[in-house]
Image (cartoon, rainbow over all chains, first blue to last red; front, side, top):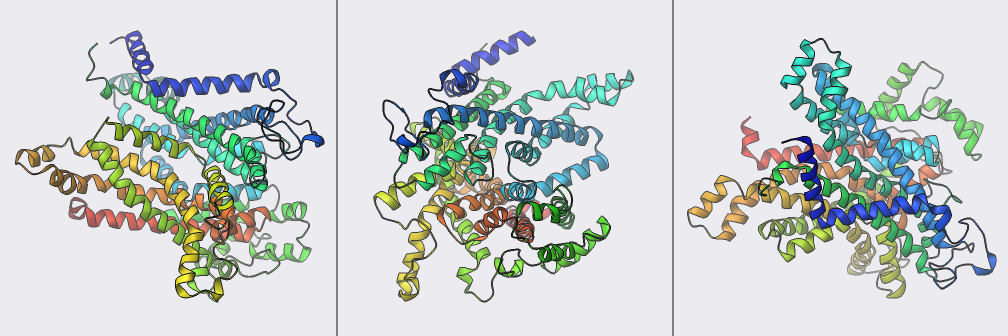
Length: 286
Length: 321
């Protein structure tokens, strides 16, 4: 089966999977909202209007205003940039670390493998959210710090995946042939093996964005993530909690945005997984 | 397990030194409440004037005795005493409260997730399977703190069914024994529900795929072929094998559950270890943060060990090795 045939099969399966397609549409829509935030947001996200504080959703402010009279819809539109940025940078760091450590572990084996695997065990036995909070306590909360902290506490899954790929691929003929030709280890690892094991990494990265968005919003909600006045869905929810008895819209809409975003990435990730997995193709005629 | 424990202490120790400069510098910068005297105490606690290896060894010696130093907060009590206060009844000790929350939620998750997973698997692609799969996806994606806010709005504010926060009412001490129990339960219902709902997603999904794998095995076909009823085939032959991976999953889900208790305890004002961690992070109470981090990691490790033992008890094949 040629590469093009595989690709068209992937698309055929992916398009048939309605959940996966809706996940893809959600993610694309979010990209557009974040990209066009300056154009589509009806108000300046930081404009304070003391005459219209805590106004319920209405014609002037579709989603209402917060305790400083700022337009909730505009703040949420700008907040989408934050969750997108945190999600992608954090997952980028995690994927990079996971790929490097997993590749070394699987390719070299022996002591390298043992030390890296032990390190993974240690990282997995510390409750991640506690670890993140502890690090934040020392380095202080800021958007950059939480991106880095989420990244360095979530690479273990990728590392295990990549290691497993390397264990199964490193004995293949084409790798042995490359070795016999005197190709350097680095080149074999990255140009010959990694390329062939990218699919599962991609899936785990898409799913990783979902959990990074969740962690960011939780941290910001607790006041330990993105700091106001920069709007993030999590820190808007803090206002929702403070005004829980009088302003339901501050609690309902940002949470809904988080839910839809996370759902979108999860559906997309699972959809790609189902469309890639050849075991699920067997029953189909082509 | 011992090397892992060792690694945990290394990482904890590394975090202390993550702050730019000496940990004591940042203290003075960010927390004006910290007096020079407190700074001196910290220097002494971590032996910051000695070489780094010596610092680590000295710190380790204290950790082995569960001595995490004194809290920076105004009460200056030892860290260990704040987590596990021997002067208070068991039910009011922070570590116990967090443990209880997690334990109850885990039991509920197990009781519900297993039947859901099994039925989804045996009725694959049915309407029931689709509904439960959708619920699982939502359970995965819903932020626990948002669900908490929504339920608080509905049940505590609008309907007034449950108290909005805390672990016991103001008049707790004057209640009868039954009243005390009911009071506690009414405070715990919302947090336990949220913990269970968000945790349920993963476990039932896992149970479903584990069951799907098992019912395709030859021995299940054999059991059917010899005329056993479907009930016996599923619940006696298949379930026992499908349950094995769940034991491992339980062990693996402990860190996530404990981590989630920070958020829920903070929202609901439950005086557990998670809430204490949150307060300590906010006030940069370093000894508290390090103490809770180390203890939670040790607890997780013990949970994993229990899961391994459980696996051995449940699976004779592993015992034979």
